[in-house]
Each structure stands twice: as structure tokens, then as C-alpha cells.
Image (cartoon, rainbow, N blue to C red; front, side, top):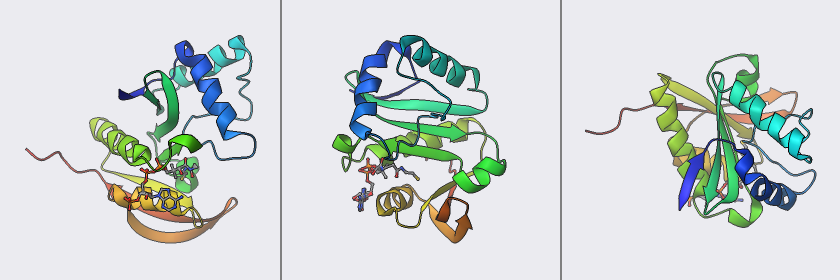
Length: 168
Ligand SMILES: CC(C)(COP(=O)(O)OP(=O)(O)OC[C@H]1O[C@@H](n2cnc3c(N)ncnc32)[C@H](O)[C@@H]1OP(=O)(O)O)[C@@H](O)C(=O)NCCC(=O)NCCS
């Protein structure tokens, strides 16, 4: 069954399997992984999970899982700060073998529900101008194109998504 779950040491091997599939140098957005995180050893992995848990007041991190396989990650940043100004409120990524199944759109929709629970009125989501899959995913869940902006990481398309109340 498909689910969104908080990061957990229980699925360390499953996460490492997904991590290996991404390989080096590819995008691995949505996991809240920082260059300083060391995830290869059990203790390093546990420290990473502990950090994400400690920071859950500021960001909600979830893994997209199916039958204990880790298929992707998604993170919702709660505050609007300088980082969010260029990276957006939500980052997400799906492992290569699980793409084009609607998983990113599904997870993004679920995170918008979470944003509503947190009282957010709208969220900013950005993607590189050449990232067609991400742009299409953002548009599919209601993202309204705002502008292209140059950042230190290259030009990005900026989208706003208005958080709507569920239909009665
Ligand atoms: C972008 C990404 C998250 C999309 O994940 P996904 O689970 O394959 O997306 P979905 O299956 O929900 O597809 C959503 C829409 O995007 C389209 N799409 C997805 N990947 C696409 C691609 N490479 N090229 C063209 N369209 C694409 C789908 O056809 C679908 O459009 P539709 O509604 O018209 O049918 C995934 O390719 C990925 O992880 N990429 C690397 C990390 C990344 O770029 N993250 C986003 C950072 S902003």
C-alpha cells in the first residue's frame, strides 16, 4: 500500500536501496539530506533521522513508501525565509524506477493537505527552468506560474499554489 511516512531508521536498508538507485550526481530532492549528513553507517543514518525529527517544527519530511520500499521523499518547509525564497516551500523527488506513476503528484497533493493543517494559505514551489517533469507535476496540482527568476543555482520557474478548503 502506498503511504507517506516520517523518516525512520526501521527502513534504513530500503532507503539505502533507493539512495543507490539515484547514484551520485543525480537529483535527490525531498529528503532533507545535507552535505554534512553521513548516512552510510548505522549511527550516521540514525543521527540524520534524529536531526530531521528534531527539526520537524520547521519542516515536515515524509517518505513515499510502498510495501516497505522507499520510492521517494518530500519536504514541506513551514517558514518563508531566504532559503524558501529560492528553493520554495516544498521539495520532492521520486526514485528513477518509480517515476511516471503519478507518485510525485500524489505526494504533493498530500503535502498541500498538511500545509492546510498548518494554517498556510499558499505555498511557493520552484523548479529549474529545464525540469519539465517537475514543472508538469507542480502544474498538475494547481501551481500557477509566477515568473522565471535567476538564482545562484541557475534560472528557476516559480509557482504559487493556493491552499483551498476541501469541498464539503
Ligand atoms: C520531477 C519528478 C519528481 C516527477 O515525479 P513523477 O512521480 O514521475 O511525477 P508524476 O508521475 O506525478 O507526473 C506528473 C506529471 O508530470 C509529467 N512528467 C513527469 N516526468 C516527466 C518528464 N520527465 N517529462 C515530461 N513530463 C513528465 C507526467 O506525465 C505528469 O503529467 P500529466 O499530468 O500531464 O500526465 C521526478 O522526475 C524526479 O524525482 N526528478 C528528479 C528530482 C526533481 O527534479 N525533483 C523536483 C525538484 S523541483
